[in-house]
Length: 295
Length: 295
Image (cartoon, rainbow over all chains, first blue to last red; front, side, top):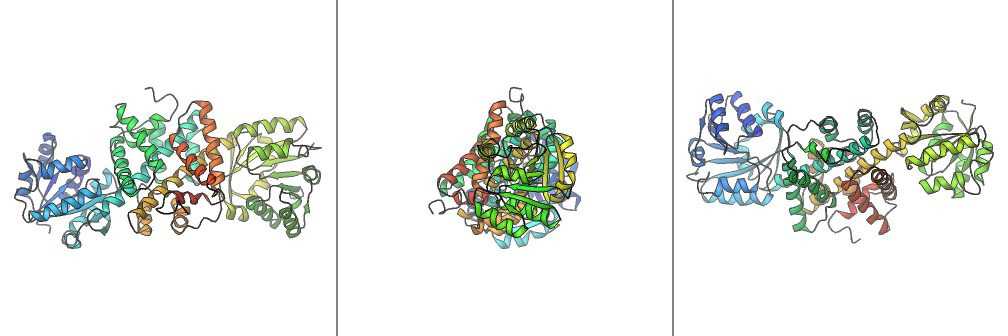
C-alpha cells in the first residue's frame, strides 16, 4: 500500500507530524487541508504535496485520508458540510484520529458505506513527539477488514497498535484513558499546589510521590511543568475539558456517577473561561498554586 | 541500641508487623498495648514480650515506644488521657507512626520535652507487607539529634529512610502523598466503573491505561481488586476519609482550593456512611461500578 496516495485533513501539530513521519517512510502524501490555509501551504511545500482549497479536492487526490480535527463539531463539518470529504468518495478510506464521542464514529461508518467509502477510527493515546517518530499508541475501532487493509500504514505510525472492536469502541477506551489521565493531572496539581503553600521542597516532594502510592505517569510528564509554570501546549486545557465532557456524556446516558471527572471538568472549564484554555493541561496548576490564580 | 527495650502502642496489622520485624532482627520487644487487649496478649506470647494493662506500664518497661494508632483523637488519648504514656516518661523516646495532622506532632514534641521525654514522627508511606519485611518507606520529622540516636533502629524497619525536617513536616508530606494517592484511586474507580458500564474488557482497559497517560501506582495495586471486588483491607476507606480531612484542613487554613480532594473525601464519606468504611480504599469502586452501590 506504499503506493497509496495519502491525504490529511487537520494539520495541527499531531496531523502535520504524522504526515511528516509517513513522508519520511516513503509514503506519498497527496492532498493537504486545514482551515488555516497557511498550514496546508507550508506543509505541502515541505513534503512536495498539494495544498487543497476544498475538502472534496482532498478526497479526489487521495486513496486514504487521515482526519485529525479538534472535536465532534469539526468532524461533522468536514464530512457533512456543503464542501465535504464524502463528495465523490467512492473507494476512499478515511482514518479518523480525533478524540470524538463514540457515537460520531458509529454514525460516520454508516454514512461512509452509503457513498461507497469506508471509515475507521484510530484513536491516539500519545503526543506530538510520538507522532513525529511513528511511535503512536493507536487503538483501532471499526470493521476488521478495513483494519487489515491498512495495517502496514498504521504500523508506520505506531509502536503500539491495538484493534479494539467495532466503531466507537476505540473512542470509548480513549475517553476513559483521557478521563483518568486528566483527573490524575488535576490531582497532582492539588498535591503540588498545597505543597507549595506549605513551603515544602517540591522537587523532594516529587521524589517521595514517585516512590509511593502517589506515583503516576502524569507525575513524570507534568510535575516539572507545573512547578516551573512551563505550560507549552502538548495537550490543551481546552482538549481536557472536551474529553471530560465526552466521558461525562457517556456516563450520564448509562446512569454512572463520576464526581471526580465532574470536578476535573469544572477545573478545566475555569481555565478556559479565564482565557487559559490554550495552556497545556499542566496549566491546571495555575488554579492550585498559591498566588497564581489571580495572574 | 539493639539492647534498648522497645514498646508498642497500637497493634493493628501495621504495628504488630513492625514489632515482629524488629523481634526477628534481634531487638527486644518489651511492653505491648492495644485497646483490644487480646491483640496485646497474643502478640506478647508470640514475641516473648509483656502485654501491658496500662499505657504507663508501657513507658515503664521500655526505652523506646512506637505508637501506631489510628488518628488525632487516639493520639490525644494515649498521651494526654488519665492513664497515658507521658507518666514517668523521663528519658523515654517516642516514635509516632500514625498519619496525623501536622500540628499534633508539633504539640507532642513540646509536651514530651516538658516531661523530659522526646518525640519524633516517623510517617509510613507503605503497607502491611513492607512493615513485616522491614521495607517501610519512612519519613522522619522532629529534632535531628533524636533521629540520629535511632537511625539504626529505623533502618531495621525501612528500606527508604528520609529525614524531612522539623516536627510536622513529615506529616505534611505524608498527607500530600495520601491525598494524591486517594484521588488517583477514586479516579481509577471512575474509569473502570464507566468501562464496566460500557461493557469493555476491563483487563484490556487496564493494559491500555498502563501504557498511557492514565498509568498510576494505584493501577498496579488496586485495579484487580476493584474489578474482582476483593476489598480486603490494607488501607481502609475510613483512613482515606481521615487523610483527606487532614489535607483539606491544611488547605483551608492556607486558603488553597482543592476540589478533587473534596470530591474524593465525599466519596469515602459515602462509603463510611453506608457501613463500608472497613473496606480497603479500593472499595470506592463499589460506588462507581454499575449495579454495585445498592448492594
